[in-house]
Image (cartoon, rainbow, N blue to C red; front, side):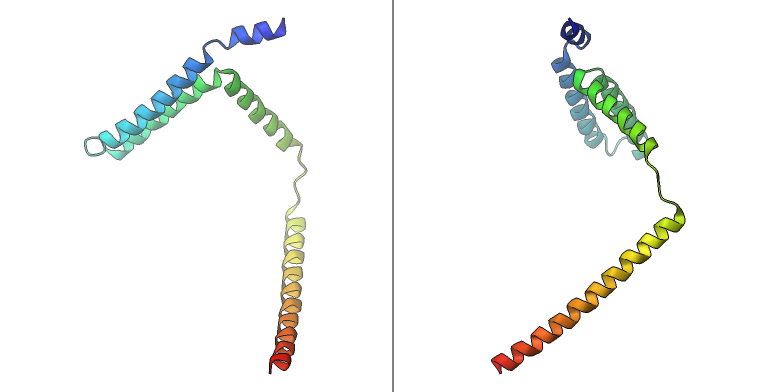
Length: 123
């Protein structure tokens, strides 16, 4: 019963996606065709409006609604994250920098020593 409700709610999804792709294609074509006749600002506003229409149509499909729900769930999860304080961020950054510098020095010394050993063996 639940699948009937979902399939009835999102009818003609293929046609909606076709309209979205045709609108995007028309926007790209119109942007390049009217490149000399219409100012850039007006073309940008037209493309933003076209993108809004395309998003509205796409979000009224099953996959678009699933993507929108995923986006909303991600926002909820981001609100649950405990973000580090400035002091914690600075300490962690400093620690990483120190470890990288120490590792670089150790690798430089090893490279130097192996290079000298190779010179002794090769001659």
